[in-house]
Image (cartoon, rainbow, N blue to C red; front, side, top):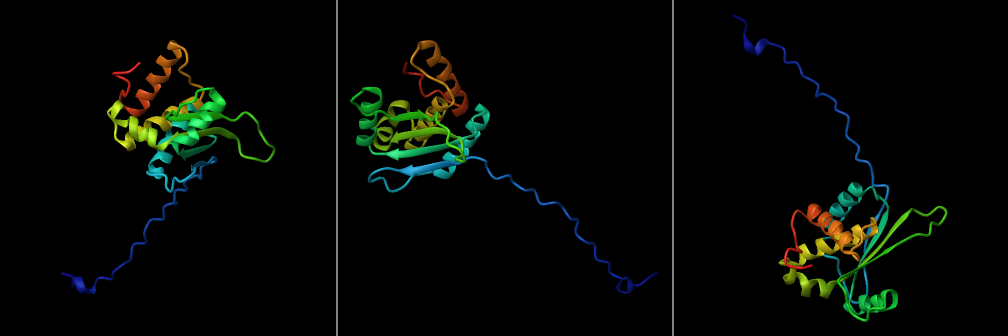
Length: 172
């Protein structure tokens, strides 16, 4: 019977596996702050969510998401939509292309305190309501609208599908 101690130990070389390279996104989602807003909460989670939605919609282009004061959004709403009141989110598509610049889908402006105030109306936490308004804004940039009832139905259905819930069940 051979002595186990006399057996030559052979090293097994670890299998070489090719490191998977994760492709860097070809577009940016920038989270910006306006006025006295000093941080953008949950931005890492929101970026992942936004990238998923934009990929599903085939709209993988640069987007700026700006967290603002109510006053700033109210002024923008007045200047661009003729409505002298604060709203939760405004979206602006970009149509001009500049040579050498990345292709920009648009910008979303979110009134932080308005979102905080309205979250309970939709049965949401602040985080969940921020998700809802970001998705809402991204869908506008992706071509959805809610002016006409038939368009509103389509847009809301897409929001509900993506979010996995229906924040509009009591509203129309």
